[in-house]
Each structure stands twice: as C-alpha cells, then as structure tokens.
Image (cartoon, rainbow, N blue to C red; front, top):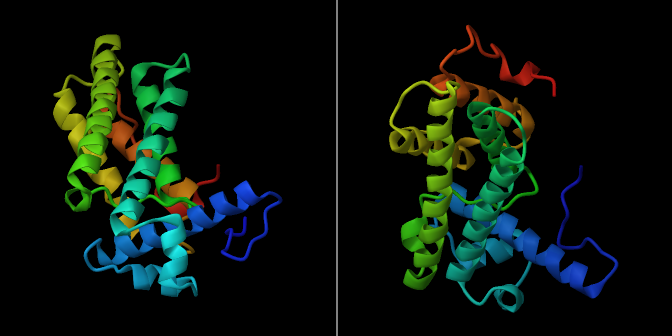
Length: 218
C-alpha cells in the first residue's frame, strides 16, 4: 500500500487537511525516533517534505504540539487494540497477546506516526499530565489482564506490575530500531514479538518460537 504524500489529493477539503496533518505527524515521528526530540527541529521536518516552516505552523503551532499529537496517536492505538482484545471470548493470556500484537502493528506500521515513548519528559507539563494519566490507565488495564490470567491459569504466577513494565519497555522501544523496508514487515514483527512476550508469561509456554521472523505468513 503506497504511503499518502503531501501531494496526495483526497476528495474533500477536510480529508485533505487530515491527510496533510497525518503526513506531518509521520515525518515528525520518524525524525523524533531517529534523532530524539531535542535533536529535531521544525526546519528538519518541514525540509524533509519540501515545505516552509510557515506551512507547518498552519497545522501545528510548535514542536511540542507535534510531539503531543504523536503521543495521542500512540495512546489511541494502545486502547483501540486493548478494547478489541477484551471483546473476545479468549483466556486472559490470549487477550493480552492480541492487545500487544495490535498495538505493535499500529506502532510500527509504515503509515503510522508513533514516536518512541521515552520522550515523555519533552512534553509540556500540562500535556505530560494528560498523557501520563492515560498511560497509567492503560498500564492498569494490562495489569488487570495479567491478574485475570493468573486466576484463570493461563498466565504463570508473577508480579503484574513488573510484567507490564517489562512488556511495554520492550514494545515502546521498537520504533527506535525497526527499519521500514527491511527483512521484516510490521505484521511479521508484531506477531513474532507478541509470541515471545506471551511465552514469557504463559503457564504452559510453547516449546519453540518462529525461527525466522521473515518467513512468518499471516
């Protein structure tokens, strides 16, 4: 599927505005992931797209607004995947795996704009308070899934808080090293990593994992 570009032409004016905003977010996220928030300037983002900084200001008033929007998208993806998993009739471990796989796919999809979530300290204080509140809510829901999994026997007895910290630590760092167009596509990596993380918590871990991520067929 080709990436939308700045010159793409959707049907309506609203669609065009949303598309251009998404293109900016994706480019900003790529830059933040590669160079860090403080190592990226608005000139860098605008220049990559062949725009002036004035054009960028039409969509985002400053760099902090771009970062906040990237965090918002990441949180939205996390809750969307979690909600879809919770609606299934699977055991808690399987729900957790589905939630993580969906979140990973959204995080590293070539059309996404998810930034490494270690840039939290660069957010404005009022933005950070909102994002941290949503993040804590998400973490608490994942911990609840782990506790339910311990109760239903699908997850080995463990500390839910530590388990979720380890899982999210691994997942949230992926955008830093994942390479688009490399040996693995986003769906293959999401499947392989969710298998690995599930196995770490499973009360009955599988005897093996995919030996070659690039050969996973979905």
